[in-house]
Length: 197
Image 1 (cartoon, rainbow, N blue to C red):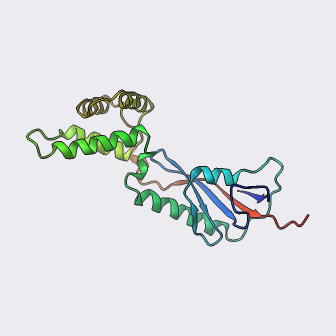
Image 2: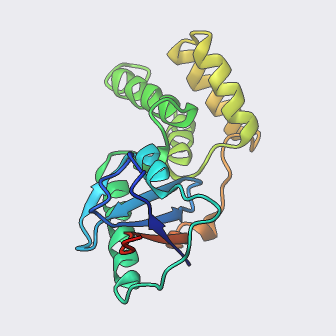
């Protein structure tokens, strides 16, 4: 647990507001930061704003942990979990990432061809489910990024994903991770300095 005093020089945040930050890691391979005020209300979801606000110099003096710190960490976790479950495909990562782009393209492709004479094969549905549930393997992510940048067609993308899954090169499938809760990596309480000097 680390607590720092927010110096008046900080321009990234309003120094009259305390920062209670929390970094959590999810089993899907995603990490998230949360910032709540002393009332446990979400301040911002901007990961960059949270990192900037939490920046302390190496000589910043620590202060005592406030009595409400654990409750605020609990509230921060609740905000992250709520956001992850509210935003569709929240566990798919960034909008610009290979996992989310591949999932969105294939979902739309399946929806388009489903009512035709040649609907999507079951292997494609299984691959799409794996992409939704599990993080991509690094080589699959690199391959998909490269192919998406080159303008791969939906049919070719579907075939590629089916092949990667058949070769066990698509996702990091860990059945035992599904039921695990997010892991709190660290929590941080920052407060306005009460020093007058």
